Amino acid sequence: MTKKAVYPGTFDPLTNGHINIIQRSAELFDEVLVAVAKSSGKAPLFNLEQRVEMANESLANYANVSVILFDGLLVDLAKQNNANIVVRGIRSIADFEYEAQMAGMNRKMLPQLETVFLTTHSDWADLSSTLVRDIARHGGNVSNFVPANIAIKISEKLG
Image (tube, rainbow, N blue to C red):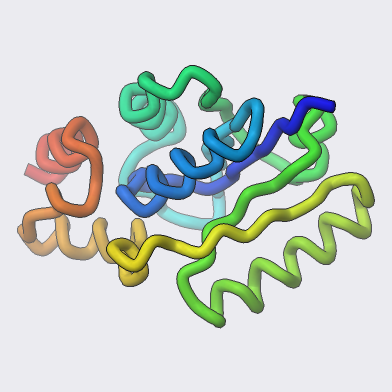
């Protein structure tokens, strides 16, 4: 049985913490789908197409990783793509509580969908896309927190 995982998120922007989770997932599973969510509830810095493009550029060296668009229920996305695993990164107890609740609901809707939690590498435990956006909006250097191509896009976007 092929182990096909989905790693969903808004990835606004994709950070080195996300990359770490994706890299580790690519080693664990046969195929990893990085599902970039539309996320209409948030006001993203980058639109969906830009986020997908940046993710594709950043992840081009991973042969078993694909980037896809995501708008809707995760269980529907998993069914449409024959994925049987959801990958979630965990930075803290607060992350775990929220993600465990989501995993439980997904399991109720699609019992064969397993959720795997990967703890964040200590280098990235304090990192979030929100913090990267805030630092960048205030003129800070985010090049240590995101891939180089994304740091350039952030700089171009915010001047």
